[in-house]
Amino acid sequence: MCWLRRAHFLVVFAFILALAPRGFGQATSGSILGRIADSTDAVVVDAEVVARNENTGLTQRSKTDNDGYVVRNLPPGTYTITVSKSGFKTVTQSEVLLVVDQKLRLDFVLAPGSTSETVTVTGEPPLLQTQTVETGDVIQSRQILDLPLNGRNFLQLARLTPGVIGGAGGNTSNLAVNGQREFANSIMIDGVETTSNRNNDNSLSPSVDAVEQFKVVTSAYSAEYGHAAGAVVSIQTKSGSNGYHGSAYEFFRPNNTAAQPYSFGLSEPPGALKHHNFGATIGGPIKKDKLFFFGSYEGFRLRDRFSELLDVPPAGQINYLPNGDVDLSG
Image 1 (tube, rainbow, N blue to C red):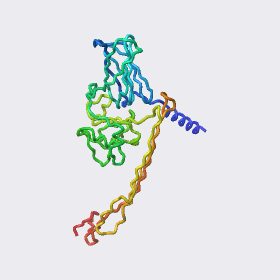
Image 2: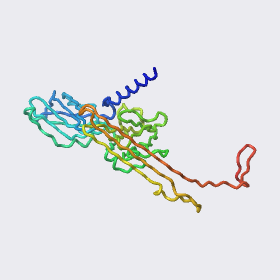
Image 3: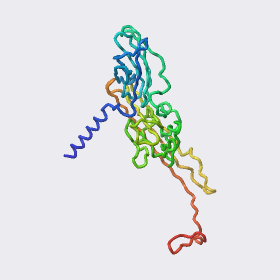
Image 4: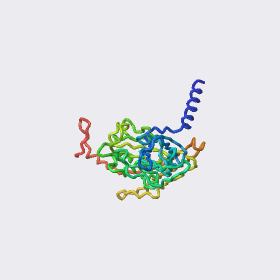
């Protein structure tokens, strides 16, 4: 009975972990920072800055000081930023897109007035990243879903980043960055390291439809990634939101589309390759603005047959030497 109680405890513990909210202090989270000033360009202190995720309702708050404000631990998504201070009109900017591990700078100017009055800002965030010296690129969900992938391995798109090429070994997820070997990279999924300690192969690869975006940092990254000499790839998976969403897909390559093998005049059967890839995703709210779920399933079926033409020398040309070696000189 002891092992039954232990198994029951593990099941309950796993269920609790599955329902636990995702930690946002990981490498995939971002931050929004900036400077709050009045119409005379004087710094406004003790103003409240609220960042609210438009899809999940997640809210983070911060207060300004002489150096400005910083709202940390924000998962990638679209946010509405609200700045309020007694004696000033409230400023709101919506549809602010924050990508994985981004430090986005947004400066605001407050006008005198009542906090019940609202000023809506429609300007776009600056395109130039001035908060960090790291170099790299972010591959968005639309690129992952729309660009062609051989074998549906989204890490192939990392080669769109300058300085990244395919590594040796024939594995499409192998990446050689800025002259480094393919085993010098670090690949993280939702902030958790997934590369093997032995050869740095990615030991876990989520479905293409389950990946929200990923960031490839090729140089000048912060000290938290100090063990990687090549690239740091931070993968952010999708999550649930206040609305239900999902997808279903199927990719099928039948054997009648395979080419006839070249057989040197011999009668060879056609190729028997059957490649079947299918799956679905679904996400939504359990409790609005509080608790969400997201699930992904992917199936893979592969049936293949190939033939080889081998040439065996005549028996008269084979001479066995006393030491066990074979002499084919005849």
